Image 1 (cartoon, protein in one colour):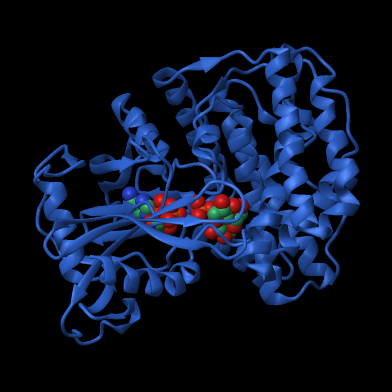
Image 2: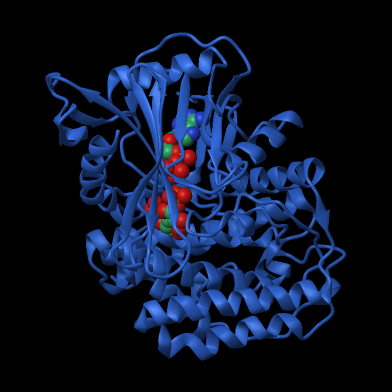
Length: 486
Ligand SMILES: Nc1ncnc2c1ncn2[C@@H]1O[C@H](COP(=O)(O)OP(=O)(O)O)[C@@H](O)[C@H]1O
Ligand SMILES: O=P(O)(O)O[C@H]1O[C@H](CO)[C@@H](O[C@H]2O[C@H](CO)[C@@H](O)[C@H](O)[C@H]2O)[C@H](O)[C@H]1O
């Protein structure tokens, strides 16, 4: 294997950093080491590759591959390179490789420390890849299953598998059924490598539906968000209710804890730490740094029962419109992995459910503003974007509040802090992955620090005040005071 691995290491040094799921952007050049190479099921080999950096711990990546003597027609897109043994392909996109993985799963097979577990018999079905590569690689078998193969590996049980299974066990209607999974040792710990779920063929991503709605509004220059055919508010409200139901089920299925003053102080320290890292990497954040920090510090001013009158619990962790599917029966949430860049030890901690709420509120803002990137930011369109975002943010909070018994907008200071934290995270994310989009979260950082100067936390409300008095979900004054230009 020595020469062969040396050659493969050379190929991967070039290929790995070009992958969408490579998380080392911003850490300087890494040195690649092949940690394991096991034939799972002929012809699929499963490699785990370490990337060492000058500073900090190494990252681990899963690289399934197939080496072929010849090149099947139309296969070039997934060629990693050529070595003495033959042509090296990304094994998840190789038809024989993906078929081998399904066989391994379906037989609940074992190969050394690699172990598969299936909850039912699996049909042999042809595979095709999900359109775009994201944080991981997903492949669809027939129209029946979707397999997510985790790329960056964190030792231990993956939170996506853990949380989805916990929700399915308590009968949640808002997750796709888990079907099979496989694991292997990384740093001496059994580590989730992949997760097969029921494929929801009738599902449409929330992000697509939201963009269609925004497009409708932009096309109708004379109408308001509540007057156009594609109004999304009823869906946003249902999505709010579904999110609250998922949180309630997670609180039943997994541990919860009432936040103490110490826990809130630790949270504030943590938020400041995330801001430190973002400000160091993205200079555009500096003018807003002091105002953001002031919002965070507000969280320690009052008793925990006032500033956060909900238990801390397990979460989705990276909730946005691209993580929800509208199926015939309602909304389904997926990808409970949390933010991919965050160490898994943090992602499995108990946190405020408002973190998820804030993620989705930010996403409404993203949907509206991303269309401005395409259409230009003339004032009338900017106004309409804001109107769309505000209307759907309000509706989401209303739906969440009705199902949870407490409206997120009643926890003003906490919600704003989490929105700021998410926007700061997004600035860093966009700087690394989509620099052309960085203006979207930057505009929100600016808005959240200007239009809402820090205010005293509100006491827990026994009854819900009417929507118009909720201060934080709309990012602008009500529509009636700003008629659209033109
Ligand atoms: N159960 C499912 N049924 C149908 N499509 C799904 C299902 N789960 C995920 N998807 C689709 O697969 C894509 C990738 O899934 P995701 O979990 O977000 O991967 P990643 O971790 O790479 O971001 C999503 O954009 C979604 O549209
Ligand atoms: O879906 P992932 O788990 O890979 O999440 C990461 O990528 C997301 C983008 O694909 C990113 O989400 C941001 O952009 C979305 C639109 O593309 C928007 O709906 C989200 O609100 C916004 O945060 C996510 O932050 C990142 O972790």
